[in-house]
Length: 349
Ligand code: SF4
Image (cartoon, rainbow, N blue to C red; front, side):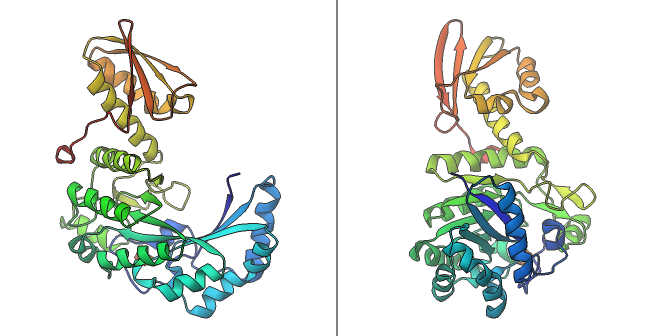
């Protein structure tokens, strides 16, 4: 049974850095205060009431958990110990920076019931990391991923394509390197320029040109397909709309409230381009959960294909896998997979 996540946003707490893109208060929607044990327990109680018997996973998002003073880390994790023992809370996850992870920290966290650590890797390219003010290297991320994996914990990696000095090739290379290092899952957040950040200043002065939405979608389609090929889940593509982000604090960059759907729809559109010649009448069958992705946002893919003279009829088929598409043209059918049959070149992004 899938766990219900009980989120605690710890905002900028514990982080001594100011990355060029970061306005942590904006992203987390939090005022920066840390919850005390009473707030932690009462929040968990509230979530428990609505969880319908599903297990709970406590998640500390935002900020840099392992850069907090040790006694504060302990004060956040200790209230959870009895709940873990009683199996009310099944697991704990947290996010942090790669340079605040080492074997001793991971062993202690594992002993406190932490099962998943997400690293803000962002890029594995040292030039990109330096230009983004990250203050750590790609080697730090590799080391941190190794420590987490060696302790038997689940390792997540967040990547941020489109940072200063980044290129599509460097983004793909970063993804390949975190996959090779054993990341168990990924989040891909294309760079967004937020108001009040150093990146905004660079953008307004012309020093930084952000990814457009269209280019970001094209790049993330390639990154998502590569992750699928490697069997590594991407649990989120694009920053969440309900986490304090809104059109008032987004200055520029690659953001859409349904970014993940745009990316999946793009993959279907590209597959149809490759599989169906212009001016055909085509019947497309897909898994029932993929109908809206196949049609595209506001039926964009229907209109897009109509421009090629392709008329699409879209139906669901329970026998197909989620990533499969059966294409029928003139009574001839073939099953394609967006994992293996979609051919991309990173040089075209
Ligand atoms: S490390 Fe994280 S919290 Fe700290 S400035 Fe960078 S993005 Fe923001």
